[in-house]
Picture 1 (tube, rainbow, N blue to C red):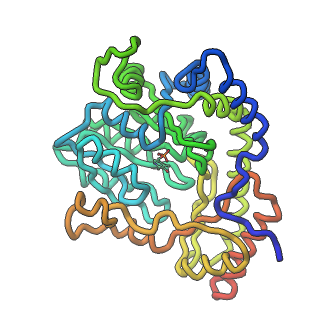
Picture 2: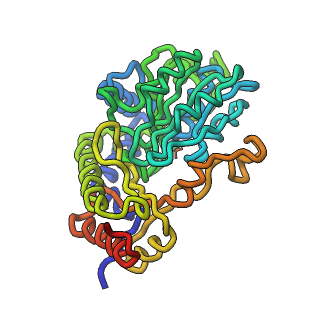
Picture 3: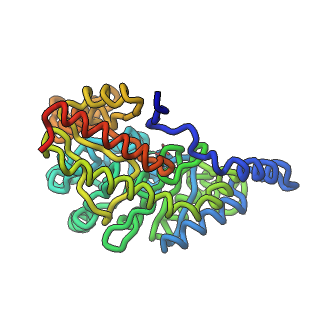
Length: 378
Ligand SMILES: *Cc1c(COP(=O)(O)O)cnc(C)c1O
């Protein structure tokens, strides 16, 4: 019996356990007893800011919180609309609803699964205040077109780059294409950590300043002096020190993810182009957070992989506006055909950096064997 290959590995931070314990001891027993928003958070923000060439990076409670903080800093609220992708995770819609605005769901490109700029344009009304695209799985959204659209219609552009930290498109890093972007450090993300956390990144220092106040109860410099109504979305000192330490290894881990994706895509290019469709090849504008196939017999492939001890995952089983939680906020009877198509076919394979070459080959073999048995080889 060969070892299982889980989709979510339990040993993501195994190599850095000693460092985590040392930081816990050091910060936990330090004289100043400072556990949030201290010098380590400031150092972590500065590291990210300088590595990106951003005007500001503000660490906060989560990627979801980061979206909400930016929307609030932009003054978006009741009566406003924000155009978001119909396919993606809950925060794309919930962050907009939380500030009292309305998410307007645009369909996606059926192959890349990022939002379709033509459909975004069709859905812009005179109540629209912002466009909020998301980079999906391994592919950055069509930011050049979306920047153009935002300028044309005088809309703000908030880039949900929660999964795309480290990706670069036409020389511009993910996160810096719009007025602001966000990162998520939740465990499963490419620069994940053992806990909750996120960041707002921006080229606009004024927006950064407002987000900084909002994340800490609207306080500016002095404690208990509230200039605006904020919230609690602060960052942990132990996690900040841990992430600062782990940042040096981040490029190598991203490169390993990309190399695994290159290998998969090369192996799968020989499959029938309809039954099992790999993402497009290449490195430009790519992030390899999750490697997603589109598969005609998705559930059968999922079972086949499971029978060989290989975990896989369905991101996302239903478009957002068709989910019970969000349907009341979407036009009744609305259709998003490409998002619906993607949710029926999508299947993600393991792609974490410490997969061994033989495990990666075993996963690709299992997919190709399924295709062969199914007559889907060219
Ligand atoms: C993970 C994710 C978020 C939210 O990040 P959290 O840190 O989990 O709150 C937002 N948008 C996208 C596209 C994500 O994948």
